[in-house]
Length: 195
Ligand code: HEM
Image 1 (cartoon, rainbow, N blue to C red):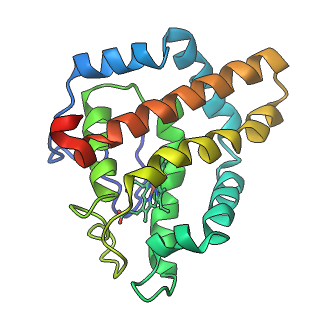
Image 2 (cartoon, helix red, strand yellow):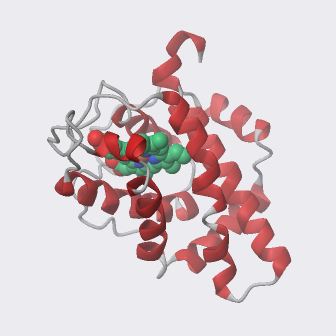
């Protein structure tokens, strides 16, 4: 795959540290969310369906964040002024994440970037990638709660590809499982020994 030149997107950077989450931890988490080969296949199809709709998906998600001041605050200065450049740069990586969720193998490199994304939501790395003057930390409770809107809002886009209701449902379930799995991974730096 040709990784597009997205500022701050370091998925394929050899300098990325390995994740503290092991391949075995990942397998057990996958089993816990009932994520299997059928879901991988459904996500590949979802990737084809979503490709070409990425900007529209992002419009929905950004509309959702933008209409909730308590969420927009995390893309804003401490005094509450939204930072346009920060919103834009994160948006480009968010778009790539949609593609990666559907098309990347969930291997050690993917795990390493999962950890990087996790850290970028915490005071350890938030704002650093984009040199943003925003608030330093996103509370874990909002990451967990976001699983619902990030899943529910994808369904109409999955349905737009002309697939049967059964296939759309399979893509939706696979997406929901993957987002749940990823947020479980992202809780690692928040919880550390408790993880
Ligand atoms: C960054 C996804 C929850 C605010 C990102 C990125 C992705 C992402 C893919 C870019 C990662 C990269 O740099 O490559 C998600 C998903 C969530 C979630 C799937 C939950 C299901 C939240 C919540 C907020 C939030 C609840 C707060 C409103 C941010 C911010 C960044 C970011 C501010 C930029 C962090 C930085 O400074 O690098 N998110 N996110 N995210 N997200 Fe989230």
